[in-house]
Image 1 (cartoon, one colour):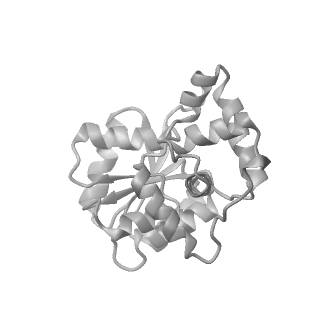
Image 2 (image 1 turned 180 degrees about the vertical axis):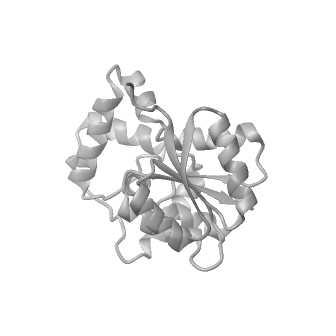
Image 3 (image 1 turned 60 degrees about the vertical axis):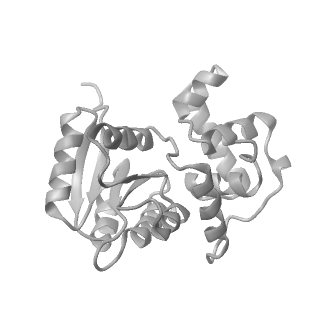
Length: 220
């Protein structure tokens, strides 16, 4: 029997109707399996550890532990998990904080069905769905955190590794990069892991912050 190709999603929102609506939309697409629902950040962290989802769709503002704090803990617990934040406004500073905490994308709550599905699909595929100005602001926020991703020596990376990191930080998925470079997504994935090891960065979002801080996206 073939392995289920659907992306395993955890939904986090304090409104049951929102969670149920999201589950119907995602599962009706045939691309996603919702493995759990959580009503707050604390429950999200526990369920993420137990269920180990591929991706998390989470509200930014919730009672108790908010989505930003939960995002930071989930990406620490599951460095390969992707987090898409739901927000009421892209102008809110909490969006910047969420990106600095490890979110790889965000979408406004009143987005249309196709926009929502595209956002979830992009993040599930490994794309960084964050505009460059937001990434730069998030990098500045990350500077003030207790364990910032510091500037480093780009000579640690080969030319091919710098190309991969630049494309990845610009929003390309493993499949996108593989197609552009004429190799396989698994080769790109291994390259990204090797870059993380060389730079001492614990998450893919940390790689994006490193790329922004070290000027790899200055020509974007």
